[in-house]
Length: 636
Image (tube, rainbow, N blue to C red; front, side):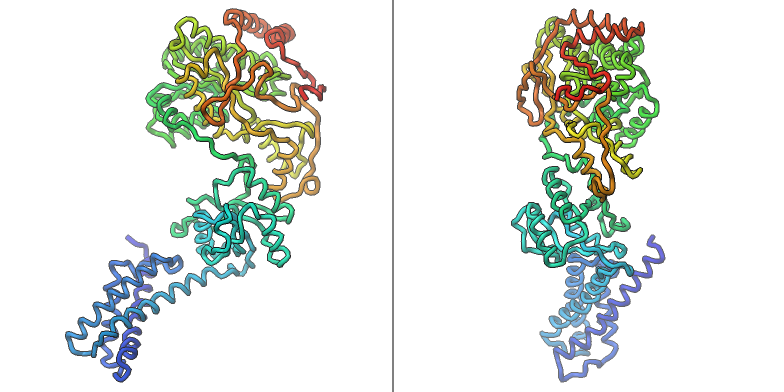
């Protein structure tokens, strides 16, 4: 049942339409037969109103929302007008009341169209007054001239509280230049942003800010746009999501959002083999360790969307595990799940869990990843990252798992930290397991043990981005360890998508993953951390070194100036899949690696830090430990 306010609006609409339809009768009669008295007989006027209201029922004329009147509404008005004009004279002619000429129905229909359309158009235009609720409009330039811009302009027209006046648009290409969208001119292409802004400045029409309305602008293009805007002292914002811009759904005010740092690092979407991923995951029992972390939780999300028979979420943190379990319960209620609290170092617990649940695929994301923390607690890092990986791999193999995928890091290449060296040990053990499985069961049998290596995940709990955000909120300064420090970055969604892609390749193409090969994600170009800091300051609408200072604190224990994704003795091998490479294997004897890890575990459990680190250096010869952060030239 409609609420009273809506009923009043419908009655008001019907009354106004009926009044205008009644007025159309004498006007049409006068134009069709000027010699006749248009007001005789008067009772014909209400019949004209009735004919319009009756004809308007199929076209829902009385329930139109004048504030959002568009083309479809005006088409309904035209159709109702034609129907009313055809219905009205039939009755009068049969009654012999009015002299109906051939011109009368056509004139009547045209008058109805004009009289009914003009108030609707006028009312909508009134809502688009640039002076919104007494607040002067802020000039903006829209980036994008497609469906996103259309939705944004419609939402802006419907929102009386939004103090924005569109100065024009920049399209993604140049072919649309000179055309108009909702009356607003397309001033050029996005690659002409600097020239367009300079021209607007000389004409004293420079907008206050730029608003990106398209979601698929790549990071390089967006960075160039940011640079052009920065030269003119302008901020760049993003329009709300399309689902928040439905003008007829009462979504509230149009609120601009700041551009996220992830947007600037966004790269063209790498095509993924979704069908292959579905074949790998669907109907299988899948275990994700470290499921509460940044990578583990995203792995859980993407795996759940592929329809596993059972999704096992393992983490040693109760709150993080509860969060991802609750999220998946809401997003994928039909997927069977088990939330398991366990430490990957607890061999008895892991073996018992694997024996009970029998996972067919294991994604091992559990690790200690924060370099300075692991430097301060080296035995914990070794036990979790190296020994814990062996525990999970051995238990998975014993439980009959088809494949295990280990998440590694670029810090494992020429490591300068205990964290990186411990992850290199995990890589070595996984390669050894893979080689042993092949030797015992042939190339088509045994548990595949794949390793996927990539760099920093943007926005993860341990990354620099949340740190910079907290420092910005406090007013700065932003702390950077060294002006020359660079890192590879990738969004968590992109990284996990490529992890799944590597899993498909590694389990289906024996040649690509033969002899313990390590898959390496194409991380693009490395980013200078100081430039990342400056970009985040600009995104906040502030000026680097003026509004927010940047201070250099020096390298921390275990850090080096730049990371590598390939060791010198493992040149990259291309794969058929974009964004995915493979490192030439550096293999070790499985028995030797196993005995060395036994010795390392014994030293760790005995609390013998010096002995454990000495064994680590022996196992990973390229380990150049920057223990106190003083080696500024490490790997530089």
